[in-house]
View 1 (cartoon, rainbow, N blue to C red):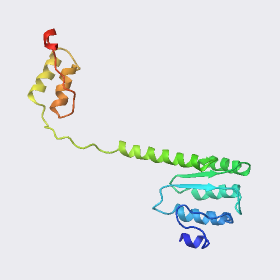
View 2 (view 1 turned 90 degrees about the horizontal axis):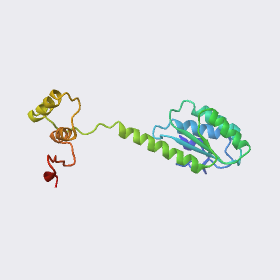
View 3 (view 1 turned 45 degrees about the vertical axis):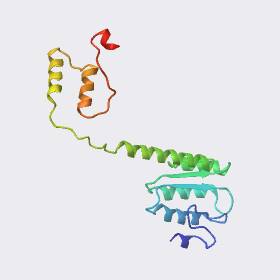
View 4 (view 1 turned 135 degrees about the horizontal axis):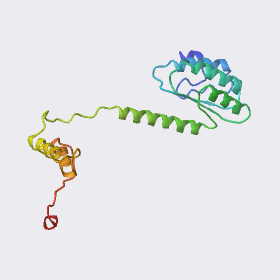
Length: 182
């Protein structure tokens, strides 16, 4: 499908190079095809001010095509003058626009890292096998704490709970006298 939108001498693989004589209509057609590709997770459009497509028209085409894409679209418009105006158009329409491709690529990588970190946060940890009932010695520890009027366990008591449920803890021993502490 993409090959039909490009002249035979243009690359139809990632990255797509439409060459300098590409008019805005070709940009639009290629974006429409690419934005619908279910295998693509996001898009980085790099524009250099040469050839048939002017930056303002290209920026407007990007904003129109990207309106309902549902995937990240970033743009790098290299240059000043009309490219600066084009970046403003893109930004006003919610498309991050950069002066250089490396800035856009870095942002893309931050977005990827953020997404991966979110996915990690939502992973369910592996189940730890444990008995449903509280062991007798832990029940006694709780009773003693409540009878002492405490609502919080001391460190040693809390560590006993963690160890009883196979959670890793640093081995801790309570010394009841200075001689035991040695």
